[in-house]
Length: 66
Image 1 (tube, rainbow, N blue to C red):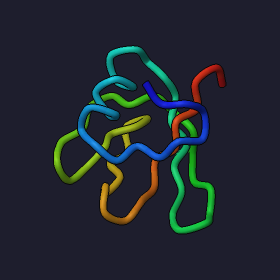
Image 2: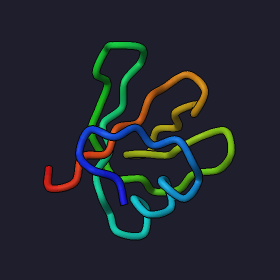
Image 3: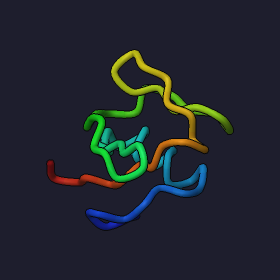
Image 4: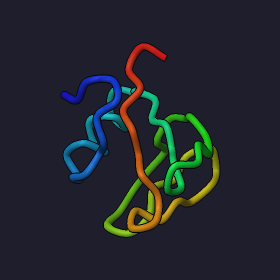
């Protein structure tokens, strides 16, 4: 499990957040984009709120308790 503010890096991180509906915060460089629940993911993309985010471009931060 990740703590609030930790970066999601591995499939296991994304899977945990998906299974437990833990919110993630999305950043494009240092710009906050959105907070939401992961609907699905693969090696290249994460779907949150009907939007696909490229895992190489965006940073995903754990937000438990949000």
